[in-house]
Image 1 (cartoon, rainbow, N blue to C red):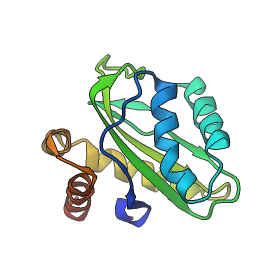
Image 2 (image 1 turned 180 degrees about the vertical axis):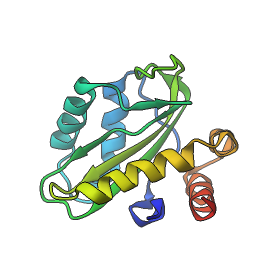
Image 3 (image 1 turned 135 degrees about the vertical axis):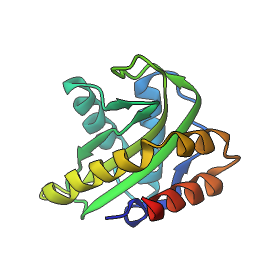
Image 4 (image 1 turned 180 degrees about the horizontal axis):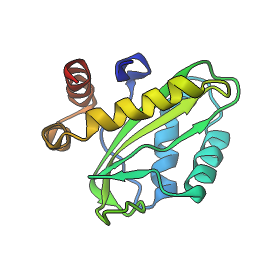
Length: 151
């Protein structure tokens, strides 16, 4: 499984402006809204998931995710917050990189594979440094695609 199978270039947000988890999640829902999904419903799903425990995995990365009725397979958005926000990471560091994953209700195996793949690719310090320095969404997507191909 490759991240580029479910993350499209138009779903990359280079400059998240939110300063709270809810504000950032709302921004991360916007690419899905452009795909015709209900961003309010999606935001509520993501917020409910965060109540169970933070999806921040450490090293400045979070993978907010949830099951969205009516979707097929997997969909993702990516966002970068240069200043970072407090997102409840166990390492206490600000979260700067967010990969939001939406899964179909019956998509258990691929969901777990996608979470594992995202974790594997984003654990590399060199990738996170390059993403932090990237000038725009196109460069961010290119960096993710390259790292995804090499992992």
